[in-house]
Length: 115
Length: 116
Image (tube, rainbow over all chains, first blue to last red; front, side):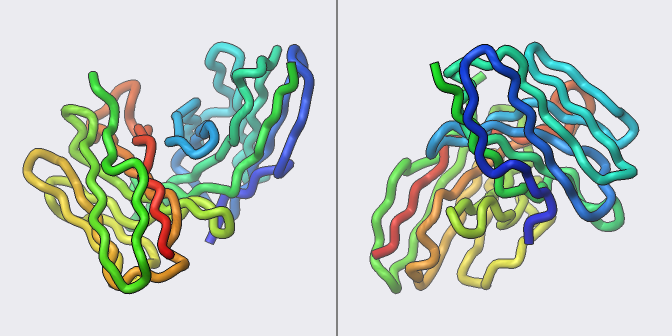
């Protein structure tokens, strides 16, 4: 079953605009990660945020985490056509008997950035 | 460093056949995970290997199996293929140490399996 659920399922914006994607999850986490996937290819790791962190930045990416609401958001600023891809959040397994290497992915947000 | 390498890139099989997919992790990575991606179910965890031992397993039937070799390379096998096994199979490797790459998965480009 999918633990991470992204919202929206699809997002279409113009180059230069900001894109915000949200992710909700149901059970506690050790960390939450965001990945990007270009069509039919492998996933590329973007950002990992730990449960005791609230915000993290990497270049034009900003991720926030609200453990009380069990939600995270990914903001891409000044988007480019090359940002067109699917974006997934992934939570690790629960600490009890779990593994940092068994990730549960949401179904993703398809972002289209129009030139 | 070379990335995660998966072979073959595309595969076409018929129902009832079996298939073996191969994955070479990033040098020095000892954990290898496998995921199945379909349009309907999304990304689903199959299993994870570390030092030739299966540490975690997802909710897939016994037709799905895997193994890891002493050089950390991994294979997964699907026997008695069904139409629903058509999917992109992704392999990911990870380091088990601390530091900047902790917890991150590095994915290969995947093997696109079509079952006819």
